Length: 246
Image (cartoon, rainbow, N blue to C red; front, side, top):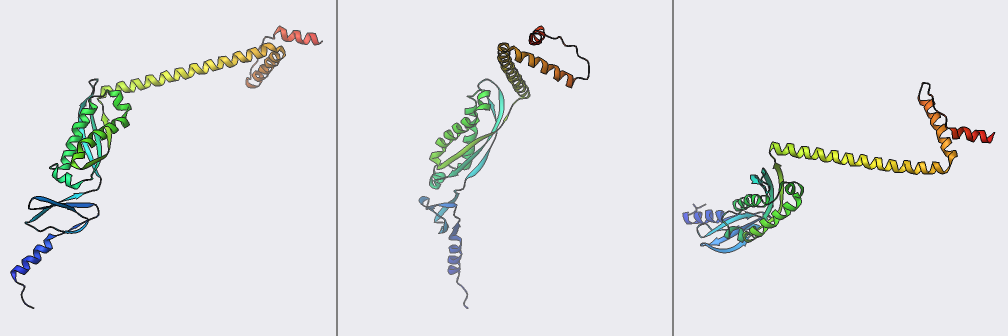
Protein backbone atom coordinates (compact mmCIF):
# COMPACT_ATOMS: atom_id res chain seq x y z
CA UNK A 1 0.00 0.00 0.00
CA UNK A 2 1.22 3.45 -0.81
CA UNK A 3 1.77 6.07 1.81
CA UNK A 4 -1.19 8.47 2.13
CA UNK A 5 -0.13 11.95 1.04
CA UNK A 6 -0.27 14.83 3.50
CA UNK A 7 -3.11 16.73 1.76
CA UNK A 8 -5.28 13.62 1.71
CA UNK A 9 -4.53 13.00 5.36
CA UNK A 10 -5.48 16.56 6.21
CA UNK A 11 -8.73 16.21 4.30
CA UNK A 12 -9.56 12.99 6.17
CA UNK A 13 -8.83 14.57 9.55
CA UNK A 14 -10.87 17.67 8.72
CA UNK A 15 -13.77 15.56 7.48
CA UNK A 16 -13.68 13.48 10.66
CA UNK A 17 -13.62 16.59 12.83
CA UNK A 18 -16.45 18.15 10.83
CA UNK A 19 -18.98 15.44 11.66
CA UNK A 20 -21.13 16.19 14.68
CA UNK A 21 -23.75 13.82 16.09
CA UNK A 22 -26.79 15.36 17.80
CA UNK A 23 -29.17 13.39 20.00
CA UNK A 24 -32.95 13.67 19.76
CA UNK A 25 -33.15 16.42 22.39
CA UNK A 26 -30.33 18.55 20.92
CA UNK A 27 -30.15 21.19 18.21
CA UNK A 28 -27.18 23.04 16.78
CA UNK A 29 -27.20 26.65 15.59
CA UNK A 30 -24.78 26.79 12.65
CA UNK A 31 -22.96 29.88 11.33
CA UNK A 32 -20.99 30.26 8.08
CA UNK A 33 -18.34 32.97 8.23
CA UNK A 34 -20.13 34.56 11.15
CA UNK A 35 -23.56 34.65 9.55
CA UNK A 36 -26.46 32.50 10.71
CA UNK A 37 -27.05 29.58 8.36
CA UNK A 38 -29.57 27.26 9.97
CA UNK A 39 -30.60 25.26 13.02
CA UNK A 40 -29.73 21.58 12.53
CA UNK A 41 -30.43 18.32 14.29
CA UNK A 42 -31.01 15.74 15.48
CA UNK A 43 -28.65 13.28 13.78
CA UNK A 44 -25.30 13.80 12.02
CA UNK A 45 -24.38 17.24 10.67
CA UNK A 46 -21.22 18.68 9.13
CA UNK A 47 -19.49 21.73 10.58
CA UNK A 48 -16.31 22.57 8.65
CA UNK A 49 -13.66 24.03 10.99
CA UNK A 50 -12.45 27.52 10.09
CA UNK A 51 -15.41 28.19 7.84
CA UNK A 52 -18.36 27.17 9.96
CA UNK A 53 -19.07 27.47 13.68
CA UNK A 54 -21.88 26.07 15.75
CA UNK A 55 -23.37 26.11 19.22
CA UNK A 56 -25.12 23.10 20.72
CA UNK A 57 -28.43 23.70 22.53
CA UNK A 58 -30.41 21.24 24.67
CA UNK A 59 -34.21 21.27 24.44
CA UNK A 60 -34.75 19.39 27.70
CA UNK A 61 -36.36 21.03 30.73
CA UNK A 62 -33.80 22.59 33.06
CA UNK A 63 -34.37 22.62 36.83
CA UNK A 64 -32.70 25.70 38.30
CA UNK A 65 -32.39 26.40 42.02
CA UNK A 66 -32.79 30.08 42.83
CA UNK A 67 -30.51 30.77 45.81
CA UNK A 68 -32.00 32.30 49.00
CA UNK A 69 -32.86 35.96 48.56
CA UNK A 70 -33.10 38.58 51.29
CA UNK A 71 -36.56 40.12 51.02
CA UNK A 72 -38.24 42.85 53.07
CA UNK A 73 -42.00 42.42 52.87
CA UNK A 74 -44.53 45.22 52.60
CA UNK A 75 -45.07 45.11 56.38
CA UNK A 76 -41.29 45.48 57.00
CA UNK A 77 -40.44 41.88 57.91
CA UNK A 78 -37.02 40.63 56.81
CA UNK A 79 -37.08 37.08 55.42
CA UNK A 80 -35.05 34.74 53.25
CA UNK A 81 -36.83 33.04 50.35
CA UNK A 82 -35.59 30.53 47.78
CA UNK A 83 -37.34 28.97 44.82
CA UNK A 84 -36.99 26.43 42.02
CA UNK A 85 -37.42 27.29 38.36
CA UNK A 86 -38.40 24.95 35.49
CA UNK A 87 -37.67 26.14 31.95
CA UNK A 88 -36.59 24.94 28.52
CA UNK A 89 -35.42 26.35 25.21
CA UNK A 90 -38.14 26.38 22.55
CA UNK A 91 -36.28 28.51 19.98
CA UNK A 92 -32.54 27.64 19.76
CA UNK A 93 -31.87 30.46 17.29
CA UNK A 94 -33.09 33.15 19.72
CA UNK A 95 -31.35 31.46 22.66
CA UNK A 96 -28.01 31.89 20.86
CA UNK A 97 -28.46 35.21 19.10
CA UNK A 98 -30.65 37.28 21.44
CA UNK A 99 -28.78 36.65 24.71
CA UNK A 100 -25.16 35.88 25.50
CA UNK A 101 -25.82 33.16 28.09
CA UNK A 102 -29.46 32.24 28.48
CA UNK A 103 -28.84 30.06 31.56
CA UNK A 104 -27.11 32.84 33.49
CA UNK A 105 -29.56 35.47 32.28
CA UNK A 106 -32.57 33.40 33.35
CA UNK A 107 -31.04 32.75 36.77
CA UNK A 108 -30.36 36.44 37.41
CA UNK A 109 -33.80 37.43 36.19
CA UNK A 110 -35.42 34.89 38.53
CA UNK A 111 -33.54 36.29 41.54
CA UNK A 112 -34.45 39.92 40.89
CA UNK A 113 -38.07 39.07 40.07
CA UNK A 114 -38.40 37.02 43.27
CA UNK A 115 -37.23 39.95 45.39
CA UNK A 116 -39.41 42.43 43.49
CA UNK A 117 -42.66 40.45 43.66
CA UNK A 118 -42.37 39.28 47.26
CA UNK A 119 -41.34 42.74 48.43
CA UNK A 120 -44.79 44.02 47.44
CA UNK A 121 -46.61 41.49 49.62
CA UNK A 122 -47.38 41.32 53.31
CA UNK A 123 -46.23 38.33 55.33
CA UNK A 124 -49.72 36.82 55.67
CA UNK A 125 -50.25 36.97 51.90
CA UNK A 126 -46.89 35.29 51.31
CA UNK A 127 -47.71 32.41 53.66
CA UNK A 128 -51.33 31.90 52.58
CA UNK A 129 -51.32 32.56 48.81
CA UNK A 130 -48.35 30.47 47.67
CA UNK A 131 -50.02 29.17 44.50
CA UNK A 132 -51.06 32.65 43.40
CA UNK A 133 -47.51 33.95 43.95
CA UNK A 134 -46.03 31.05 41.97
CA UNK A 135 -48.38 31.79 39.07
CA UNK A 136 -47.52 35.49 39.09
CA UNK A 137 -43.78 34.77 39.12
CA UNK A 138 -44.18 32.33 36.22
CA UNK A 139 -46.08 34.86 34.11
CA UNK A 140 -43.58 37.67 34.73
CA UNK A 141 -40.53 35.53 34.01
CA UNK A 142 -42.10 33.95 30.93
CA UNK A 143 -42.86 37.39 29.48
CA UNK A 144 -39.24 38.49 29.94
CA UNK A 145 -37.60 35.29 28.62
CA UNK A 146 -39.85 34.88 25.57
CA UNK A 147 -37.55 37.08 23.38
CA UNK A 148 -34.69 34.74 24.33
CA UNK A 149 -36.53 31.66 23.06
CA UNK A 150 -36.90 30.36 26.63
CA UNK A 151 -40.20 29.05 28.03
CA UNK A 152 -40.76 29.17 31.81
CA UNK A 153 -42.79 26.07 32.67
CA UNK A 154 -43.22 26.63 36.41
CA UNK A 155 -41.90 28.52 39.41
CA UNK A 156 -42.21 27.15 42.95
CA UNK A 157 -41.35 29.10 46.10
CA UNK A 158 -39.65 26.48 48.29
CA UNK A 159 -38.72 27.83 51.72
CA UNK A 160 -39.57 30.98 53.62
CA UNK A 161 -37.15 31.48 56.52
CA UNK A 162 -38.64 33.73 59.20
CA UNK A 163 -36.82 35.45 62.09
CA UNK A 164 -37.13 33.62 65.42
CA UNK A 165 -39.29 36.33 66.99
CA UNK A 166 -41.69 36.13 64.04
CA UNK A 167 -41.86 32.34 64.35
CA UNK A 168 -42.78 32.70 68.04
CA UNK A 169 -45.42 35.31 67.22
CA UNK A 170 -46.98 33.05 64.57
CA UNK A 171 -46.96 30.10 66.99
CA UNK A 172 -48.76 32.20 69.63
CA UNK A 173 -51.27 33.38 67.05
CA UNK A 174 -51.97 29.79 65.98
CA UNK A 175 -52.41 28.70 69.61
CA UNK A 176 -54.82 31.56 70.28
CA UNK A 177 -56.79 30.62 67.18
CA UNK A 178 -57.06 26.99 68.34
CA UNK A 179 -58.28 28.12 71.76
CA UNK A 180 -60.86 30.40 70.16
CA UNK A 181 -62.20 27.57 68.02
CA UNK A 182 -62.32 25.22 71.03
CA UNK A 183 -64.35 27.75 73.00
CA UNK A 184 -66.74 28.26 70.10
CA UNK A 185 -67.24 24.50 69.72
CA UNK A 186 -67.81 24.15 73.49
CA UNK A 187 -70.35 27.02 73.49
CA UNK A 188 -72.18 25.52 70.52
CA UNK A 189 -72.32 22.19 72.35
CA UNK A 190 -73.74 23.85 75.46
CA UNK A 191 -76.33 25.65 73.34
CA UNK A 192 -77.44 22.43 71.64
CA UNK A 193 -77.57 20.62 74.99
CA UNK A 194 -79.73 23.37 76.53
CA UNK A 195 -82.07 23.26 73.57
CA UNK A 196 -82.46 19.48 73.89
CA UNK A 197 -83.02 19.76 77.64
CA UNK A 198 -85.66 22.42 77.06
CA UNK A 199 -87.43 20.16 74.56
CA UNK A 200 -87.27 17.22 76.99
CA UNK A 201 -88.65 19.34 79.84
CA UNK A 202 -91.50 20.49 77.64
CA UNK A 203 -92.40 16.91 76.73
CA UNK A 204 -92.23 15.73 80.33
CA UNK A 205 -94.34 18.68 81.53
CA UNK A 206 -97.14 17.63 79.18
CA UNK A 207 -97.18 14.08 80.60
CA UNK A 208 -96.64 13.86 84.40
CA UNK A 209 -96.53 10.06 84.30
CA UNK A 210 -93.42 10.22 82.08
CA UNK A 211 -91.74 12.47 84.62
CA UNK A 212 -92.49 9.99 87.39
CA UNK A 213 -91.10 7.09 85.36
CA UNK A 214 -87.96 9.07 84.63
CA UNK A 215 -87.59 9.77 88.34
CA UNK A 216 -87.80 6.07 89.17
CA UNK A 217 -85.33 5.21 86.39
CA UNK A 218 -82.83 7.66 87.86
CA UNK A 219 -83.18 6.01 91.27
CA UNK A 220 -82.54 2.58 89.72
CA UNK A 221 -79.39 3.83 87.94
CA UNK A 222 -78.00 5.31 91.14
CA UNK A 223 -78.64 2.08 93.02
CA UNK A 224 -76.71 0.06 90.42
CA UNK A 225 -73.75 2.40 89.95
CA UNK A 226 -73.14 3.41 93.57
CA UNK A 227 -72.24 1.03 96.40
CA UNK A 228 -73.49 3.40 99.03
CA UNK A 229 -76.72 4.42 100.69
CA UNK A 230 -78.46 7.28 98.96
CA UNK A 231 -81.26 9.31 100.55
CA UNK A 232 -83.45 10.59 97.79
CA UNK A 233 -86.48 12.86 98.40
CA UNK A 234 -89.72 11.43 97.08
CA UNK A 235 -91.82 13.92 95.10
CA UNK A 236 -95.31 14.56 96.47
CA UNK A 237 -96.89 14.30 93.05
CA UNK A 238 -95.58 10.73 92.78
CA UNK A 239 -97.18 9.81 96.14
CA UNK A 240 -100.39 11.56 95.14
CA UNK A 241 -100.58 9.55 91.93
CA UNK A 242 -100.35 6.27 93.88
CA UNK A 243 -102.84 7.48 96.51
CA UNK A 244 -105.39 8.31 93.84
CA UNK A 245 -105.10 4.81 92.41
CA UNK A 246 -105.82 3.35 95.84
